[in-house]
Amino acid sequence: MAGTRRIQPGQKAPEFDLPSNEGGRVTLASLRGRTVVLYFYPKDMTPGCTKQACAFRDASRELRRIGAVVLGVSPDGVASHTKFRDAHDLNFPLLSDPDNFVAKKYGAFGEKVLYGKKVVGLIRSTFVIDTQGIVRKVFPRVRVEGHAARVLQALETL
Image 1 (cartoon, rainbow, N blue to C red):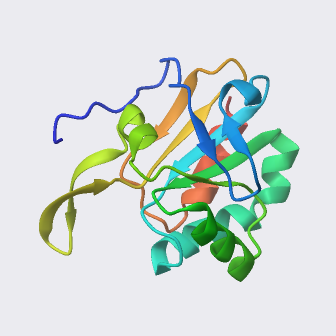
Image 2: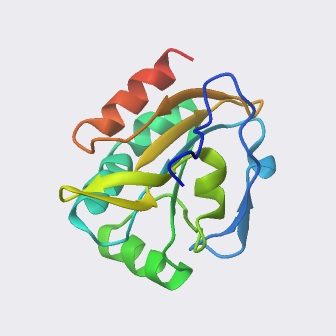
């Protein structure tokens, strides 16, 4: 697992087809022509993940102005995502990747340090994908504080 390779800027973004808390499924192909902010997070309703999701929610006006769509992805199920969305008034889809299949394709799953111990799990990561499906910016091992602002800044330069 430690050898999982992260997708790099300039590479074609791996396709995905995941269930959404908004009903149905979301595919990357269906978003062609839009800029996508795809962020992977470990778990609904945890402090860091809540802070990150709320920051993207609060940046939604700026994101819409730029023409970007935000998608959050975690291993949690659709029912958990719906509770998370409702509890925090989230205004973007949360996608369920229970086996971390998509996270692994993006290199957002592997060895990490959690509370001082090496573990294997989802690595908080964000990928900015352009209108043609090419990864333009990668934020590996994200620190939540100020992350949404850094993503907005990267989008402004695309």
